[in-house]
Image 1: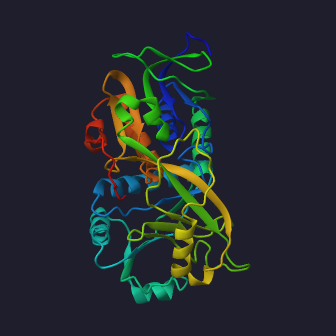
Image 2: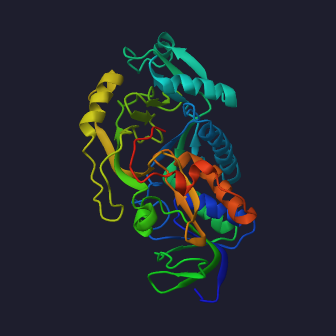
Image 3: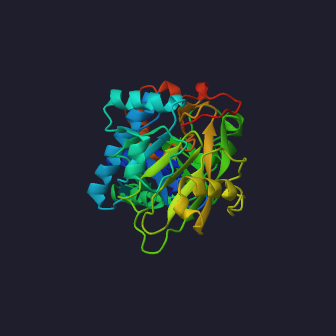
Length: 383
């Protein structure tokens, strides 16, 4: 790359936030470079893995319900334009109890925003989804339009379409900016010089490592494990169309149906131990006993189902579970974008539009996403 080559924007990090930001910028006519140290949807990234839930329910958190609604429309539009079939409309079922405030708040917010949904009594759950043991449940909330995104393929496809739109993509590790004020250029560890008017660091769990002085105590990468369990031969009752994506917020467990013949996915949403995204060995097993115990109780027919695949990924949690979209406090043309906090993937298209608009048109970022709202003490935030 020539040192004299200048971009409108350099985006560092080709996860779902960085990829969609770069794509929206390129589609708007900007000259954009997208760089990632390991490559789009690499195995260390929070945006990799097979699948992610896209649902509208967020309790009383209306901003995320509206963003999810917008993002779903954009994901479906992207599918139509590219033929990628990244979205599976499985429906999303919230398993709920009367004493769980988030469930009643979700019902109210879905109604306010105009999201299709239905409250199912326990008898209705048992009739419609007999695979589910409901003895500890009072009701469920069903979102028929929601479902699952194929994560790894989605990120790779967005990067592919970004390049078709005129963007430049490369695998390169970029050094953090130094000093204060306007950043004229950044260097890669291989010695290339990247010049741009604006720089976006959308580096997920690497953000605290790149900017330890401001993010080391504001974003907390944690170890998260997921498991895929095999269904009985010839049994289609756990396939999409017969079995929903589901969340049990009270138990901090979620899962999804047998998609693309990989088995049903189940994972604990509890925040795990701190993780180093570069050095951690990705061997699962720490939460297997917890997940298998839940499987036996909730889906009795699968009590002896074998683990087909497992994966160690990570969340990068902010103290309040909100995203981070803000300028660097000391570097006026550097943007910090991250803090997916375990619920960010679905929002990629909406967030990408938001960041692209801030860069191209100016204005202020969403106040909730500002650096100032991120405390320096980690707290559990349910999203």
